[in-house]
Amino acid sequence: MNDTSGTIIGEAVYQNRSFSFGTLSERLFARLFQGLVYPQIWEDPVCDMDALALSERDHVVCIASGGCNVMSYLTAAPRSVTAVDLSPWHVQLTWLKLAAAQHLPDHRAFYALFGHADRDGNSALMNRYILPYMPRPARDFWNGREGLRPRKAMFEKGFYRFGVLGRFLGLVHLVARIGRVDFDRLLKANTLREQRAFFDAEIAPLFRSRFVRMMARRRASLFGLGIPPAQYDKLAADAGGDILPVLEARTRKLFCDFPMAENYFAWQAANRAYKADGTGPVPPYLEARHFETLRDAAARASVHNLGITDLLGKLPAASKSAYVLLDAQDWMTDEQLTALWREITRTAMPGARVLFRTGGAADILPGRVPDAILGCWDYDAAASRAAFDSDRSAIYGGVHLYRLRG
Image 1 (cartoon, one colour):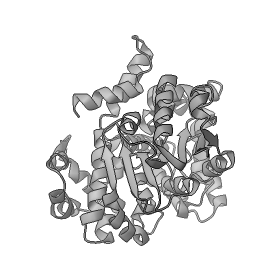
Image 2 (cartoon, helix red, strand yellow):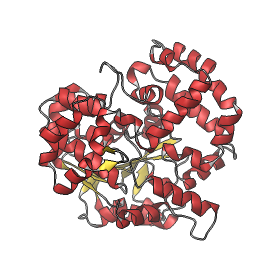
Image 3 (cartoon, one colour):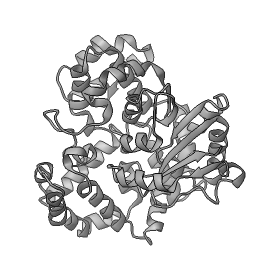
Image 4 (cartoon, rainbow, N blue to C red):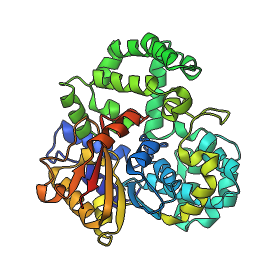
């Protein structure tokens, strides 16, 4: 990663400017974000597309993260998708997925690379069908090494086990094994009742263990979920200082509120991969029925290694209709929020919508973004609640939807 990328990540994360333990936490988090964080993004794209009523008329701006949601939004065939991310790793991963959709011969090859993500021939697929069509810097990136192996070889070794999130889930599984939790029983559950019984008997007791309680109360322990220090502090404050009940409640929603046959987030958490035979739930972009639409739409997407406010500042007025901010605003100061929403309002087309998530339950914008800007938008409470209830990833406290007035 170059110095410029490190600078923009640092500027996004650092809220404690003087030396302190908070500063050290922020710098450690920023350091982790210089590499691969999310082999799979942890926000539900179906929830997003339903709330936004995404269609072929839309021009979308979103944060790329691991690229899964960018690709899934393309299955709605919008007129354009413009993605940004502070992590050069995420940018390269998203470009790889876009190129793969356009150049791999069929859905079977596409699924081998990003669905199974552990097939011996995946490097050969990349060498033959994808990398020759990518710019030289992208070829160099994927041919380069991550530790002892070429980066592209990660798709032959179980790609979803890599990155900060992959390692975090590996630690979760280690703790579960020590606690004699057998996730196979959960993966075979046929009813919500069976899932809830499993959670109560095997997972809930882990939250009572001394080790888990000790780890959960340390900021760095949740870096693997992409939770920076500022967001951790908000979560802890919302929970009266004890974050453990929040984590237990959200884990319960993940494993108990949606059938296993429909929740690929639960599969990733419990299995660190999608279902091995390819018949389980997956993100929309990996479904065979969407492949041809995805192939046609991929050329209408672009990815940029920038902050979202910087990107919007380069765009024409009234040029975008849908914005997906993930949880990026939880990282921001009041000044940064104001600058972002000033640019959103300037670039918004009539009928524009903005969707974002928060670590806590409350909307974070009122009182922080000036009324002269936020007053141009209406908060859709009913759609926000419906989006939160349907978000299978279950990690966030709130999903929020704003609509441009007029």
